[in-house]
Length: 328
Picture 1: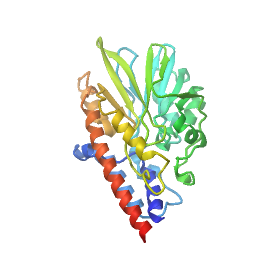
Picture 2: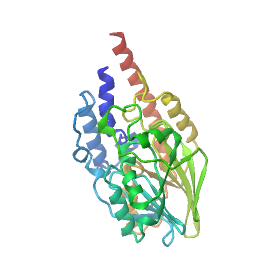
Picture 3: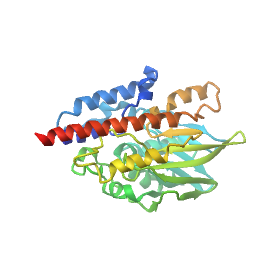
Picture 4: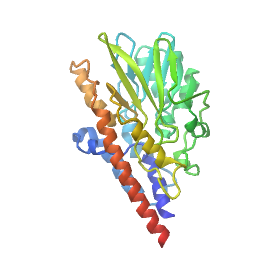
């Protein structure tokens, strides 16, 4: 069962693999991805370390970035409140505010401070959302909930992992634990979430996690309405696809997500790891004077095509490796 142990070790970097698109990107945009791959390659054939230093292995996840508005008018729209390597998003409304993802354990305060820097009061946050229940995206949610008093809304598929503070399928791996957070409301596929003048639509896009949830919303700038997508993930990363799978039905779930998103072409594609959507480069173009720097209708389809090919390759590789082990 050594190969399973190795895959579990690699889940320490489960949300930060590199796609073909990233491999072709400029070197300065890929530095954090290269660090991630080096860490995975060092871990994958070894036992899970008793103590894993996330900060040392993934410094970009902790590197502060000045918060900024991605798109919108006045104080409306979508704001980035994450780190260099983790995407967290803030959506203000007249009736209170929404936050998507909480980063690593201990980063709830970081998100609250970023919201304050933008001129908003964190205590006005009414809703917390989570893309998926992996500690680099759910780790700060319990702290954020305590700081804001906001309602935690999530999918049924990820509820047990959020409330239990574990990585589904690797419950005994304490290195992957996150502070548990109580889910106050379950959101279903296609359900609309309204707060003030903002409407978000939930899309359950499973595979990367059982309850992986993507969100879409219209946003206005310069009198024009754009469709924004906060995509959960479709990377295999270190998920076990076979023998035993990370969770039952994971392969079918990945394929369901690839089929579902085949025709999606959002105007604005936002990711929970900024490098997936090239956010750093887009931010530089925005600062240089391009008000529509984040409008990119080709980025999401290109990424998904790459990820689907990577999924099929990973499934074949894992299957061959598992069969070889079992035949010994």
